[in-house]
Amino acid sequence: MVCAAGDRPCIEMGSRRTHEEAATAAARAAYVAGLAATSNLAAGHRWDIPTTGTAAHAFTLLHDDERTAFQAQVGALGVATTLLVDTYDVEAGIRTAVEVAGTSLGAIRLDSGDLPTQARDARRLLDELGATETRIVVTSDLDEHAIAALASAPVDGYGVGTSVATGSGSPTAGFVYKLVARESADGQWVAVEKLSPGKRSSGGRKHASRRIDRGIARADVLRISGAPPPSDAERPLQRALVRGGEAVEPSSLEAARQRCRDSIAELPLEATKLSAGSPPIETVYERTDP
Image (cartoon, rainbow, N blue to C red; front, side, top):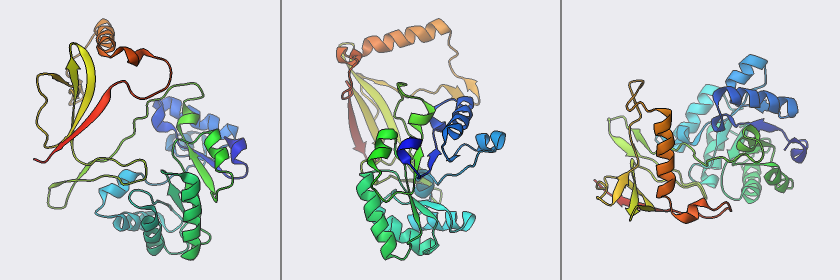
């Protein structure tokens, strides 16, 4: 990745993909290999590695609007900070970022969509707004191939995570935390969702169940907000595992092994294929207002 990036810096951001101790070790190894900095503060404290990062989409969603989020970040970190501009609409996000921080804004981050096109459009708009020195940092599951494909794009740096912290050939699950609701000033829960290109989320509380047909899983049903409880033909997937720091149902190693065997036996035959492809179980979304 460092070779593919050339003179552009790479930032290690893979801590969420691995164990906490492995994360600090990966950050150290990445820094030795030539990455410029890490988002892992523990690694920075232990080995004096430069640390850097940006806000998360959840930070923006937690505020009433994007402008308020940017104002809070700039107020705390100054105009040299990096603002994440693709939570809703990229162009509107860039305009708001420059309005809040001024033309001395340090950088913006793009984390979704067609990154080469997004970067070119972002550079053109920043220059039109007078923010000619504002840098563009891109993220979104980058590896050496994605970085090489961005060589001709007006990008100033890369945030790389999964492909650094997990190593080549190691499978990863593409699970990412998404904020789906926040409490308003009057104590009411408000659904929030991202509108990022290709990464749109669904706001509101979710209730997950698995639809079973003659002992075989056929669909995972995700009910949103006030949806009715699952029918007899569905098995709830959400279970409390820990309450008050204590395991709800302490389990033996053999019980865990048996649960794994039962879960695999429930899957359709196509789930056992080794080739890449679409998920073998359909996900059905159902929304019913309370």
